[in-house]
Length: 327
Image (cartoon, rainbow, N blue to C red; front, side):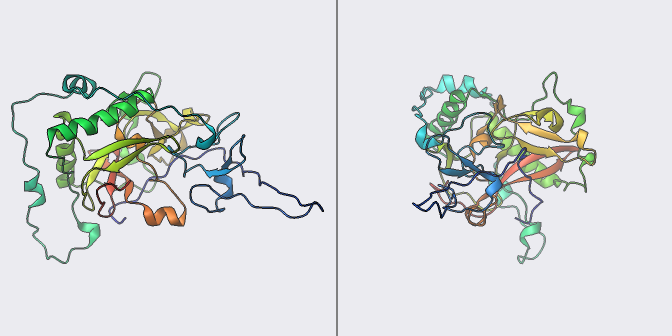
């Protein structure tokens, strides 16, 4: 994706996964381990073996992905008895309270005005210069309740509090530490027009007009996200949010979804987003950091880090058109 340089998931303490050997009567021959998800034996340092069935899984192919090799025993989804999560009540008042939806009589700026805004330049505009788009929420209020209930179910099941912004907690990084000017090599500045689009997305979410996404549960893959309507290329899906902490404080953390926020020239000032306690739907979007060639071909969303008014922010942006029902 050409709009900005992408983030990378923090991967630490990688140790090459052992190979699974099958010996014949002469004690000769061996079979390499392959990932049960993508079928590739590449990235051996990221292949994790199940302690029960001995099958291999890439850390980034798991759902949700793992950021590091777990301590102690680890069992693959097939060997783990995963129970169906308790569904969040499809009751408007409960959903309003859970997401802290604001009721406002003020009319929201019509997002079609952004979509229909005429360009001053030629139609032959490179993708790099195209503007970001606000997501288009589902028109049916009942369907939006179902979408939000699916997210609430996933958050409750994972013990995560809903948040739609970066949070700064006592004992972690201060907000003043989030300084985009510290980024090694510099960080792309989000243009004013795109900041307005981002703010529009935030306002829509505050009013309960959520992104057209459904969180679904699979006993093997866990929680995943599917598009509930057609999403255009370069649409802002959501912001990657959670508690902000220094990378140095998380070196031994087995969190499954940490994301780089600031890659500082001084490593002691580098920051990560930790969505294990507070987060939004971004936590359940899988495959955004799949490094395999096949994964890159299927990738439809990328994390992009921007300088937004002097602070680092991470946005999930569609890098191609996404069909309804597509993961």
